[in-house]
Length: 94
Image 1: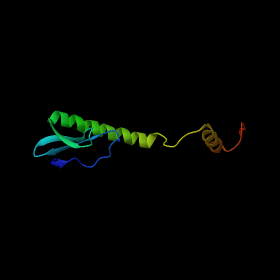
Image 2 (image 1 turned 90 degrees about the horizontal axis):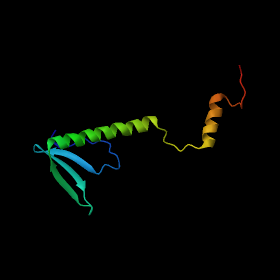
Image 3 (image 1 turned 90 degrees about the vertical axis):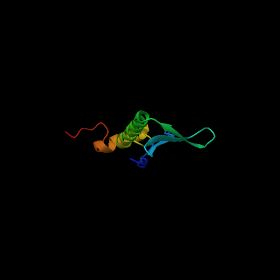
Image 4 (image 1 turned 30 degrees about the vertical axis):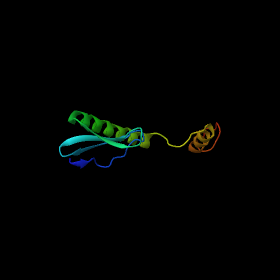
């Protein structure tokens, strides 16, 4: 694929971007002085970076789908438990 990678969701701790241009592979990042730098890398390194990015996206999707994003307090868990059981305390209807 020539040019920039497809726009992917990135982890906020992922400070780089990879791309291919004219048959060469590059990684772009900001250095300590906030200047953008492009560094030519080999195909194996490019593929490793690409794999890491895909794993990050997969992990972020799992977190979004399966982990609760709100704060959980004892009181909210108690209220949720009461509402799911039907509202009674220690009462069994059977």
